[in-house]
Image 1 (spheres, rainbow, N blue to C red):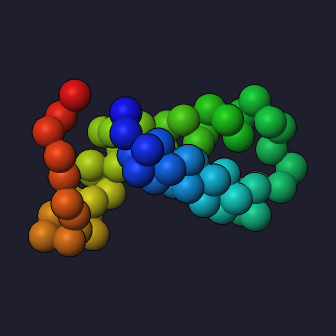
Image 2 (cartoon, rainbow, N blue to C red; image 1 turned 30 degrees about the horizontal axis):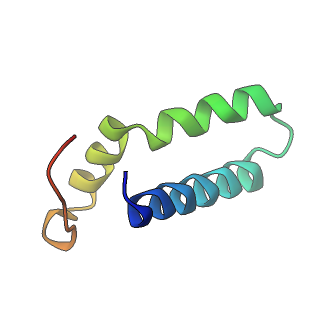
Amino acid sequence: MNALEFLGDSILSFVIADALYQRFPRVDEGDMSRMRATLVRGNTLAEMAREFDLGECLRLGPAS
């Protein structure tokens, strides 16, 4: 994993964690971690990208 990929993954995880915390402040840490893990999964992100028609905006490298 290169440095930019690591940074991007970290930022995405933070943004999603913050949004979940803002939306569900009373949910416990374990449940929130599971929700975040579901949202940052590759399949979930791919589905969101298709839903928002982001294909032409994304710059992708080879799959690992």
